[in-house]
Length: 157
Image (cartoon, rainbow, N blue to C red; front, side, top):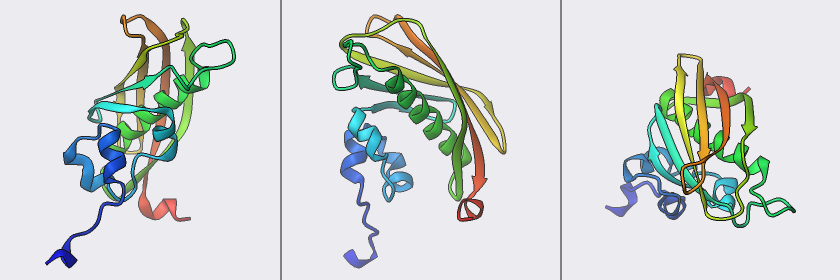
């Protein structure tokens, strides 16, 4: 009977990253990605309309001790891309085509929270605004990411 069960090789990674059990069948064979794991990103809410996660400042800083600007973009792209992927659904892929950010203030410690809110969820494009805040709720940066939605057959080309 156990031969009929499809193994989910990334189940431990999904649990550590806070992915809800309902999404394990969808992500269990691909995981969340090595960079998400390396950055310490943990999802706290996962829908196409709103995707949230936390990321530690520690380990993700630049030489001045501040959260690296690129780390802000990693969190923004992770949230926007996962939200767009959930919107696209099975059998479709998403690729980022544009991302930009404004950094408002720095963070030297604690957890950063990112919240990606859908601006547009269409058939071929999904755009999210991503706001990163510190533990006191102060805005650290604002990003916008647009993903193109492709049929899986087009990603093989």
